Image (cartoon, rainbow, N blue to C red; front, top):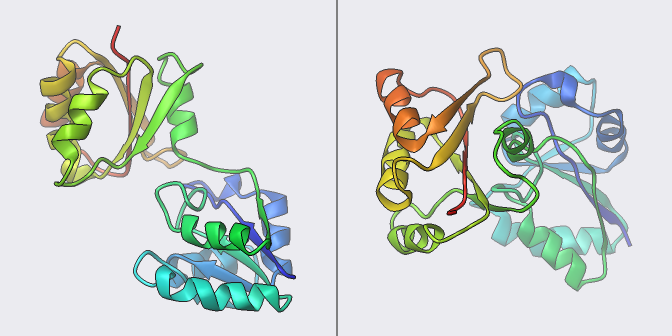
Length: 223
């Protein structure tokens, strides 16, 4: 039997790459990558010559069985996403589940995940929280927002720059304009920024200052 490694990669700052992650990526037979162009630059930076194979949301369903068969034959694979930890709002779950079902060993290395620093530096309670990732784009979005309006734990969302204003406006509508929120963007990068305040205040901020970068939105729970 081979083994599958889930290997986190930096969400921005390359210095967040761990020594163990580099070692594993050098030693496995194949690296499965969400985008081989993005990951190719990362591997080149750390002088990693392991073959890359594309594995993303559009082809992972077709690839899982073939990868499992190679793992059964003794091959070792590492799975990486463009940034952060695989399977957290990125490909990885399907292959991991298949490996577990076939008794193939899976090991996930600790490392970068965007929501953790955003949650910790938000100043909102983090002893209990719920990670929502990306909200449904259309179907089920309104229903989910109605459900979350009653959530008492701190909530964590991912959002893209072109949808941030719409999402914040909906949060005002469903959660209330005085609900506390912390919005972090470009974490670990040169222009990292965290904006905290009420939902109305933060919406006003990004209305006046058009959002750029990748965002993590941390919302206080209902009191």
